[in-house]
Image 1 (cartoon, rainbow, N blue to C red):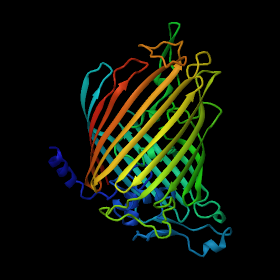
Image 2 (image 1 turned 60 degrees about the vertical axis):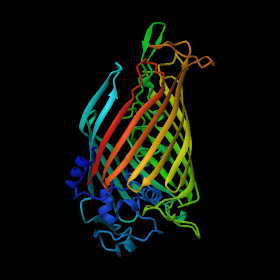
Image 3 (image 1 turned 180 degrees about the horizontal axis):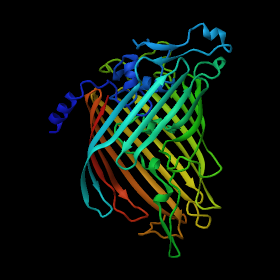
Image 4 (image 1 turned 45 degrees about the vertical axis):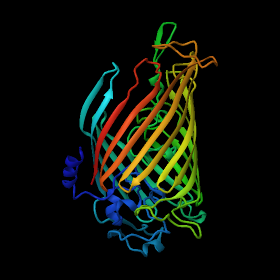
Length: 462
């Protein structure tokens, strides 16, 4: 019923590039650079397929095992013999022959429940406008930039990072890489909205902040100052690479600092990530002997594999002049790729030692989450994600509503969250998304009603 006007809009975008952007995977700038379509690196774009993820980890270059696409000409910044003259000369580089930028425009119809429990219908035209730029600089250096305008935050730099690949060639290609800048940490790619999802809503464990939990202690209202969440992009230095073609690691130093960009204490946060893939395309983009892509995949690069991931994040945020809230989170997930079916489950545990100051106690959070996605047709992706999320705090506190007891001397609040969605590609760079945000159980420390919502989104990239 909305298909006809949407198709008219699609007709107005005939000059758009052929790839939907999502984070620092493949974007229209790379499509123009390598002269390839969406399905080379995406399954129902912008969801990255296994080759797209290898492309991202490889510093925006096609893996050596892939036939090199017909790319654009480049402008050399020096002659090849200069390599032999180094360090007496400058190592040659290159520039893309075209300006490597792209744009993304998102508009949506939004139906949400407010804090008073009443539904509101909003036209967010547009909701989000993004400028994306990315390029390689020779064989081992690349950069990515995402500047975003939203109605809530205005203009902000989401990501701005440089990638230095294969720093120690003797250890092998992609063994040691250095990524520096404002960046998403991609703690679990299984749950990362910038890599592997159809809609925009996050899991609750990703967007949770200690400031979401107000308390009353002996009649006094306490607010947790920390705005930190695991989902935000932040300044970071990360070393990553492949120990084997199937075993990925990363360690990093991050700024933390909640929603701010300047450091708010004298400590840097630390994190690690580990990933192992059984079967299918290896993480370096290659296949084992006698293996190859699955057949009967409608032109998509599908896979049959199991991916295990884990991460740890350790940091602190100041809650007063003398007290830092030490926080940590540990997560694990298992993902199964079976042709058109992509499913998996994960678990997260997190703790803030002193979010309201030194005299109240710790705040714990846990999440058990899963997802199921199915590629109905090459242009139609159905998905559902679910999560059971709960927080626990000292039982001596009071909140703006009844506190159900966990039976372990702690006050517990639980939420059961569902995110069903359907993505339809009207063109490879024009998509229509219907997504719901639903709660079957919602107990909040603030006493607010469940923030159920429904979105119909038109998303264009060019």
